[in-house]
Length: 201
Image (cartoon, rainbow, N blue to C red; front, side, top):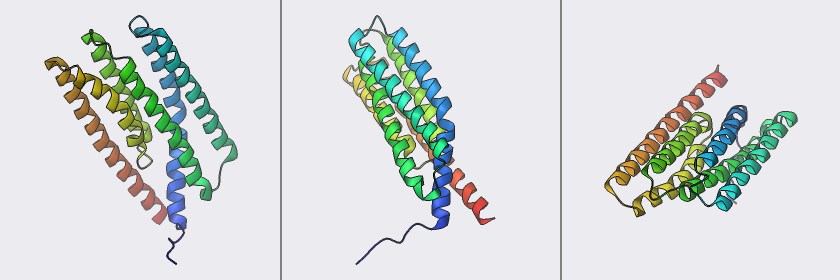
């Protein structure tokens, strides 16, 4: 009977530090999320169906509140290293749902007859992705779990409203996301190497 060996103490310790970094960085990112979401609703108030906008904004506030409670629970419980995978998975569920909501914004906030609002939307989503690169690079795959759902709806909207300007926006946006992904991967590798060196010492 083939079975995988249990993770070593070093593996658990490494994962524990990664999860701890995620939870430490999250509160500021969640505050920024609420501010940016509220500002976005204000900017698009007269350009998007208000019922969809309010549903989206309410979902952002609800999810962010739940994630705040999760962070609070993590620091209150101070889980042992053997629980790190479970807390990491719970955090990743929140990251994935957040990515889906911001991806939805890339669809419902796309104003087809206003290039100004399209540029603003690209700037907005790019800013969220840059923020995710800075706060989620500590955990393998976290950046992709957030950024891929964010990228797809907006890119689809741009490509289905094909004009020369919009194609430039789409290509620039995708190149930016690719660059952020590359930087995120390098940050992850640097962080892992640093933690391993610390454990070895």
